[in-house]
Amino acid sequence: EAGVAQSPRYKIIEKRQSVAFWCNPISGHATLYWYQQILGQGPKLLIQFQNNGVVDDSQLPKDRFSAERLKGVDSTLKIQPAKLEDSAVYLCASSFPGQGYVQYFGPGTRLTVT
Amino acid sequence: QKEVEQNSGPLSVPEGAIASLNCTYSDRVSQSFFWYRQYSGKSPELIMSIYSNGDKEDGRFTAQLNKASQYVSLLIRDSQPSDSATYLCAVNPRTGGFKTIFGAGTRLFVKA
Image (cartoon, rainbow over the protein chains, first blue to last red):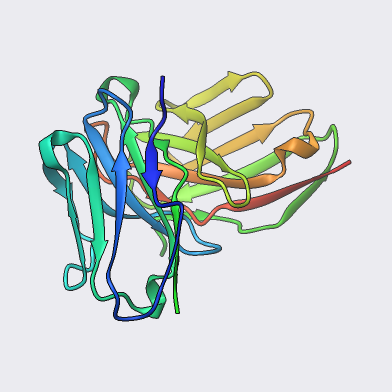
C-alpha cells in the first residue's frame, strides 16, 4: 500500500512570495489533515477535510493560508504572502474512519522563508 | 494550561533499561489517545493507540491510560539506541474524528 505523498520536499522562498504544497493521501482515506510543525514543537492542525468538506480550520490563518481538496482525494495548501514565521515543516496526513482515526503522515515539506 | 502536556526532556536512559514517557491532557471527554515516534528530520509514525483505561502491550511497548487522572504513558522495555527519537502524545477528544491535539514531544536518548 502506497503511503501519503507530498511535494515538494523542500522549498525556499522570500517573504511576501507565494508557495503551494501538494498532498496525495492513502487510497480510500476519507480524512485528510494539514499540519504545521515548527522546530521543537508538536504538529499543529491547520485544516482537516472529510472527503472534500472542511471539518476544522480554526487554526488556519485565513488571511494568508488557503487549502482545497478537489474530488475528495488530492489536496493543496497555499500560502500567500509568506512571512518569516511560516518557516516550518508542513505535514500532510490521512486516516480511515474504520481504523480509529490513526493518522498516517507523509514525508513533509520543509519551508524556509528568507 | 496546555491541552496536551509532555516533559520536553531530554530523557536519557541506558541501553536495556525501561524508558517511561508521560503525558497529561486537559479535555476530560477525550476518547482516543496515540503515541507517535518522530525521528529527527522525519515525519511522525504511530507506535500505539489506546482507547480504554488500563494497559495495552505491543512488543516492547506498553501504553497506559488513566482517564480519571487524565494521564497516558508509554513504557519502552529493553530500550535500544534505535529508540532514540522524539515521542509525541496525541489526544482526540472524541471517536468521531474531531481535531487531534499533539503535545510538544519528549526527546528520548538511549545510550549504548
